[in-house]
Image 1 (tube, helix red, strand yellow):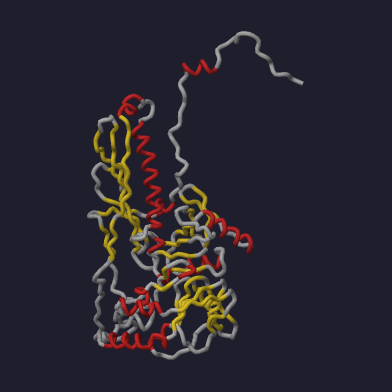
Image 2 (cartoon, rainbow, N blue to C red):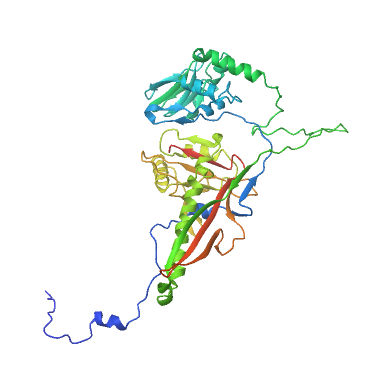
Length: 455
């Protein structure tokens, strides 16, 4: 058994602690733990914008389908946001806020347990139902009489709106709660006088017939095909939106302070100002990605088209859910999800014995589904209840997809869309630099991206 040598008296050679005073230390640049891959910023094509605004011109289109009703208040006191009632047949096009508020106050809350049949297919429609909280399946009958899943409904979806127009009808599908649900119900008899006023005012408006529309709500063009001889060809033209949406560039800013003594005396071998700027810009880039996902004005999660919002059939993201999300658009380029959501999808694939192959994206390995890469983005919220979202998007102007926006021709430009401007030295000898990042994101067509919610 070896024994540790013991030191007796003075040391016989130079110690390492003393030797360090004469040695040159090899150093690394500063690292930050908060830096992420920022895949969203990397896969978006960036469009330089002059003038601070980017206008998205589209063909003139008319609303097709029905949007969701907005809800306000906590879960135990949910109510309907009155202006959003115009998404319901019978109230569409009506804008009197007092009348809409009165209608909103007549809704009555009804809580149902999981498994409850809210409405039976073929039964008469006697009420308007708003699904305020929870999830329900829309069940129909297949060609041979077997039960089929028509769709999934969740917060804000509404059914039976035609009862407000006075038209009698039956439920086209069975609505069955798959979780405990909170319903807001409205019976026409309780607001009969108010609805008659609405109908009278809508009838006073000039009736402008709608031209034939495509499934996307755009006016059909008169074309001739398959003809023979010399028939008179139809004439047509393409109309544009009169008030196209304009995206204003958002801004993220900070003032970087560096003492002149530090930059004068401690600049070798690394430039102190350059390292400070590098880490500050990294933080700004992280904030940019967060804003592109979550900004209330232009963020992706807050601007998804109602027809591009989907819900999981059960809870975890399954291959069926990913297929449903993928089928809503052409040329889907990327899925983006929180890393925990990607892990949950992997578990579902393992449980079903399905293999999700991997691919190489910019020299890194990423899982795919149907050949579309699934990229991590921790800026997509992972809620306290364990739910999140998955974004599927098409990118690029050539395909009418999603494009990132940055400022063009900035003075004192440090990087694309980022300016660093020296603002002076104060009486304490501290130099200040204004660091500014301009950014936004635009969706060129309603189906450019979609979101699988409550994952």
